Length: 339
Image (cartoon, rainbow, N blue to C red):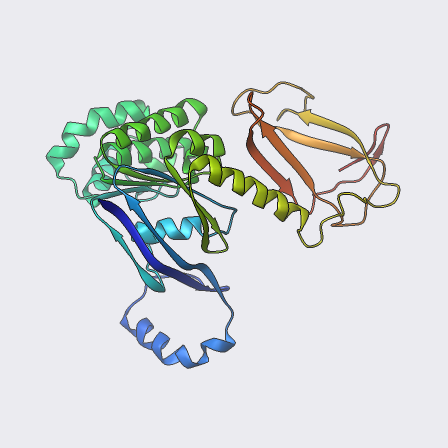
């Protein structure tokens, strides 16, 4: 049985346009302006996306920032409408797209739980039955009668995911917001998604954590510039994403020639520092890592990139990134110039 079907989804935004609530006069004005659209500047966040997802599958959606992942999830969640194409979802949908989505900051955690449950189509008796399980999973029991405006972003995500995952949605849509939570809670969320699959429910999961995509998902979609460029097994698709990312870094306009750096310029020293500035070679999960590069001298502005990769014990890339251009601060010391 097909749980999610997308057919020719396209979404266009006008550069610089602020999205606002529309009334009938806006629709009429848009129709009258159609003839002049060719002279305007637009961007297609999605451009002809089509796929089908069977019930009970956990599907990972990966791609660079700006590839169209969040736009796709917003269309599937009925938060925004496509410019062209259709999206069909069979069953009740639970979505967690941004920190605090669907919550009111002036209401307490308890009030927001009931409000969000009602939005998802739950009856009060059904919410009452699940209430204790939701609170226990979220870990915010002590603050349930505190207004959400006093919650941290992590607490918001805890409550939001707990509501979305425990109110028995047939389809659960989760964006990258889980990265806000701590390691223990993220593992609980991943375990809960596994449970949902065992119950025959469907999960769409956007994440830059490729290890989680490989371990959790049964299928993956790779998006690039608004297109689905590949669709297959998570191991296969994540490897292609890594290759695509590497090629993109090497071919970025304005990036340095990796084989021929500026004359007289070379890397002299690398330091990993904790948030307090202390140099260290060991970090715990959740720690902030500052990477300091020491060069032999200042290079031309915007003439190089810095790239890093993290590997697990199986020598698999679990995270990667780059800065282009590198934010540079040049000053002399016994080590050279700090980049």
